[in-house]
Image (cartoon, rainbow, N blue to C red; front, side):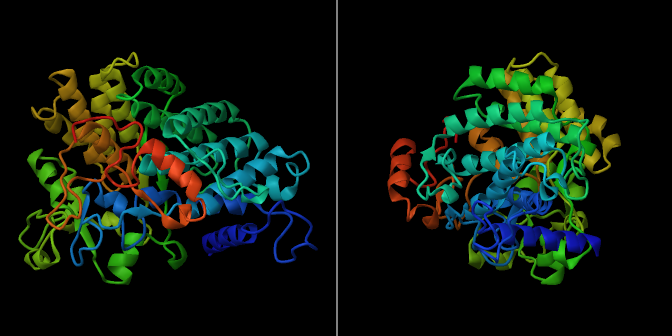
Length: 486
C-alpha cells in the first residue's frame, strides 16, 4: 500500500507541475502549487526509464527492431510500417521534470526549502538529474539523429520553436554534462532511498551508471570519430562503470496493479499473448548450445524451442500456432526489467580494449562480460563448457574478435535495452538481420522518423534539420552510423 501511494503521489507531482510555469504565486493560478515536490517529480521520471527496453503492451518496437521478439497474432509492427516516434512525453514530462529539479536546487531562493531538500542533498539531486537526463537524451538522439536539445523544453521562456542540434554536438555536450555530474556526486551526501526507486539512494551506483553511459556513447564513435571516442572512453573507463550484477540499471515492478510488469498485463491480465521470442535469437542460441536458451524461453508442446519467424505475413501466422513462449521470469506481475546490465558494459569495454582504446586485457573483459550475463540467470557453472566452443572462444583477427563481442552483446541484451542492441547492429551489422516477408522496407531501419506533432508548428527548424541530416525516413543514418556493411 505504501508503494501504491508513492506512485500515486509521483503522478500527482507531474500533473501539478505540468502547467506551473515559473512556480508563481498561488493567487495567480490556484490549481497549481508554488512549491512542487522534487521527490515526487523524480520518482515519476524513474518510473519511465524502462521504455527503452519495453514500450507498452502492443508495440514493443525496441525488442522488435533487433529481432528479439516476433508477433504471433497480428502483424502490425514487425513489418516496419509504423515509422515515426513520438518524443512528446520524453520532453514535456521526463526531461522537463529533471530540468525543474535542477532549477529548484540551483536557485538560492528555493534550494533550501523543504519541498526541495526532501529528495536529498543539493549536489546529489543535480548530479543524478543531469545523469538521468543524459540517459533520455542519448536514446532520443540515437533513435532520431538531430533533435531539439539546447533550446528544448523552453516553453516557459517563450521559445516554442526550438532548433534541432546535430548529434555530434549533442554527444559532445552530453559527455561534458555527465563528466561534470560524475564529479558533482557526493557519496557523503544524501539521496532519498524511498523516492530514488532505481538505486535506492546509492550514490556510488549512480556514479557507475554515469560512467557506463559515457562508455556507451564513446564506443559508438568508433567509425565516425575514433580518436575522440578513444579519449572519452578512456576517461569514463578510468572513472569505473558497472561490473557486478548488483549495479545493474533496472526497473522493479511490484505485486500491485498500479505498477505491474507490462508483459504480465498483456499475457496474464488480458490473455492476449501478442508476442513471442523470435526464431532469430532462439536459433542462434541453439546453434551455440547456449544455456541461456531455457532462461529466455520455454519449449513448445513437442519440447522444441521453435521461435516465431520475424515479420511474416498475416496469412502465414496460422502455420505457427505451437511455438516457444517466454520464460515466466519475464511476465510475473513484479518481474523487473533489466535495462543496462554489467554484461553489456564489460563487453563494450572488451571492444574498446580490442581496438586499443584502453590498457586492459580484451579477452578477460570478454569472458567477464559473458560470465556476468550467465550470472544473471544462475548459470555460472555453464561458462567453461560454453567458452570452449570454437564459435565462442576469443580468437581470430581484430575484426573477428569484435564480431564475437558484438554477438555476445546481442545475445545478452535480450529483453533489455533494445535501442542499444539496435545501435550495435547499425554500427557493426552483427548479427545479420533482415526484414521479414511482410516488410514495408528493404532493410532494418537505420532510424525512426520525426513525429508530426513535433514539427508541424516548428517547420522551419525541422526543414533546417533534414537539410543537414538527410531525408526524414528510415534510410537516413544517424551521425555515428557511417558503416557501409548493412
